[in-house]
Image: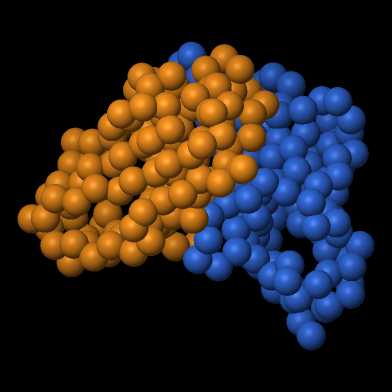
Length: 115
Length: 117
């Protein structure tokens, strides 16, 4: 069965430091992977997605993620954290469900930015 | 315009009330979704509509009743809810769903925060 594991329910970094949020997946088929961000009291917004075109995917707000098949990982990074990056981040994989597809979500990682 | 709107933003209801949540998108998307999200948890899929037809019902209790009057509008009718149904209800849409939905981005609305007393 497909699944997504996000390592660390909370990650705390200083403003200006590197952000690294980890996501590992298990999938029996080539995966389509997504990172979404949820700011407090808001819906989810797509940061970036992997659809097999390129292993390094650039997203919004300076985030990027690298797909590594050998490690079954799709970690999210940003070179320099900003206070506005404080939010909950979800990794998800698209899996078949009947004649549709659904997103299987990781548990989420709360990113805390220290001034 | 990549906006999905949801009304109301907040809703408080008693266990005997009937209320409805509304979701609207004008992106021409043909797939629409309802999710339930409890605090500090990822969203849980409830229903999927594809081309105005209900295509997925994730074993949701009958006190939740979805409706898709047209391709832009999605409703969730609520009746006789329980306190454990208190959550953030998120609506999302994507281009077409179905077999093309594998790589589609889902666009989420801001949610309706529901409290059942």
